[in-house]
Image: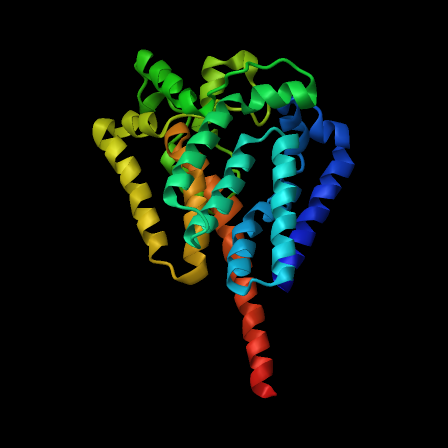
Length: 307
C-alpha cells in the first residue's frame, strides 16, 4: 500500500505545481491547441503527473488481491481523479485508458461477462466520436464539430496524401526507424518526427507546438520497403507483444493493460511515436514502480527473517 500511496501523492503534488504555475484557467479552460505550447515547458513535471495513470493498474491488481479497505479507497480515489481530469481536459485518450484498466480487471476477476465487455467497448468507441464536440460546448463554451472521428480516420487521410504525391523514403527528414531506436534512450531526440514533418509539409498554417495530425504505421513501412515493409513493421509489434506475454505475474498484467491501450497508435502514428510513448510514459515507469515495490517487499521479508 505504502509505495503506491507515495507514488500517487508525488504525482498529485506535481499536478498541483503545474496548475499553480500556469494558472487554473490556462490548465482547464483554454482550447487544447492553445494548451499544448503552455504545458510543453513543463514536460519533465508532467512526466511525474503521468504516474497517477501508470499506478492505476498496479493499485487495481493489489486491491483484487488484498480486498483491503485502504486499497479500495486508494483505487476509487485514483479512478475518480483520472475521470475528472479526462473530462475537464477533454482528453479522449485518458478516458479510454481508464476504461481499459477498469474493464480489464472486472473481466479478469469475473465481475462482467465478455459480452458485456464487448458491448461496453462498442459504446465507448461511439462516445469517442462525440466526446470533444459535447465537452467543448459544456466546458469551454466553444463550438466544435459534433461528430469528430479524429484518430480513426486521420491515418487514412495521411496515407492517401503521401501516396498521391508519390513520395518515398528519400523525401523524409531522417530515418524514422533509427529515430525510434534513439527514443529508447532519449525521450525527445532532436530529429524531426514523421508526424511533425507531415503537418509542417502539408498543413504549415496549422503548426502549433505539440500538435500533430498523426501519421500512419502502414505508410511508414511502405515508404521504405513497399509491401514487405508493411509486413516487417507489424511483425516487430507482434514480436514485442509476444515477449511481454512471457513476463511473469503482476508485471505481465501491467504490460498487457498498456499494450491494449496503445494499440490504436499502431495504425495512426509512426513507430517513433509508439516507442517513445510506450517506453517513457509506461514501460520505464512501470519498471520503476515494480522494482521499487519488490525492493520494499525484500526489505520487509528480511526484517521478518531477522526477527
